[in-house]
Length: 203
View 1 (spheres, one colour):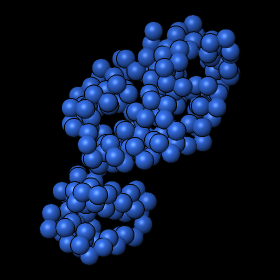
View 2: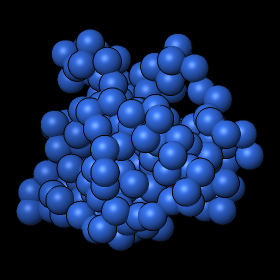
View 3: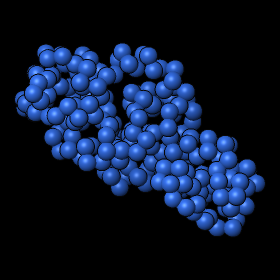
């Protein structure tokens, strides 16, 4: 493993443990700790502003890679995790923005963890609002193409088990008392919370 990758992996672990999970600071090995201090990524047992920004960037790249592998390339869960760990170290800024835009600026990874927002998310916010919307924004009779799914792990698993996947076209049949959608030759009833987890482009 390259030295840069070792430092980035340590930063990622520190961010997840201390920022997302509110746990104690993980103790990296002495060499890694020294490098983190030398690069001014940590101060004592806290991420500096520089360290926080770098960690968020690595997390963003990792989770965007997970979405791409899961939603578009249909990789297995094991392949998603192992490949995303490699991708996060080699994705350029241009490729990062292209992936994020392709996926509709997703807010969570396939496991339901937050994807830190990037500049392309802020720039394209208004455009994305008009193109990619929650299924609940569609009226009966409207069609949409599923772009990505959000929500916690159980919600994602439920949607996948129903065959509701990115790339599929759906039609809203009714919205009350539950959402009734047509997917291929099947009609599926889902509640509003599940419907809000489906992000579509009107077609």
